Image 1: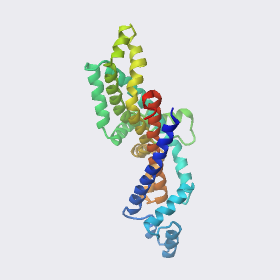
Image 2: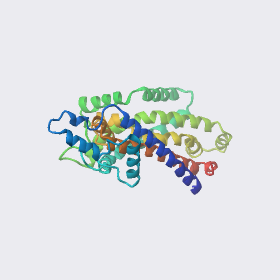
Image 3: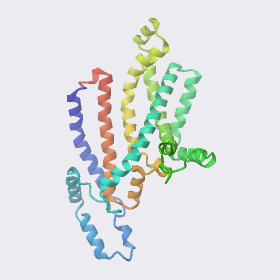
Length: 317
């Protein structure tokens, strides 16, 4: 692993994140409504109290000044306080990050296993009925809206059959590893299906390209079994081009599970984002959005490093 590659990617990430933060800050603060609108119709909140709140959160300053103040505090590790709850933003995000990482990790593991198995099988049987069935299944997975899939699975397995819990992360008063696993099953399956569909197609395309190479034919000529050729020589090289896509989707699992978390009432980052949107909670919104953006950027860097490990030709790229 090249230290120069890592340092170069990290150096490029700094101005990128600065630019992203500037755009996000402008979009959030220029959107209709404001964080103090929820108090406007409350007779117990006086205009003087609203003025003090606006001054405390710097809302009376010009937008460039607000951004400069926010950026300085954020770099120093002070993400501010939630307007909705009054708690530190870092505390709000940290409490929700664990459940989201649990959901994203389970979904990613399941999606990766499915994609490798189906993608390799489809490539090995390219043009045959197995390949066509897998192609139809992945196309369906890409076409189905995630919220619709979540509602269908929730109705079928939780409401109709009663096999799995319909919502939440645990049963109050009866939490255990098995109980949490049961609550995790449906939302993780939804995210896994959506991501496995695209990953399978990328791995299949890479495998078909690799299986046409001369060294694969040489491996078969030496009497190696199909399994050995596919896994040892084919998959290792075919998965390299798909790493970037998979890495970006992994970041998307963390920052983009809003709908799935909402359907299953999963107490993660997605539900926090929805609550903050409803309350125009600027500090929390910026914290969640910045964390999601950083996750995507870091996923790109990790993808470059993994590709460099798998393909030495990329190490000095």
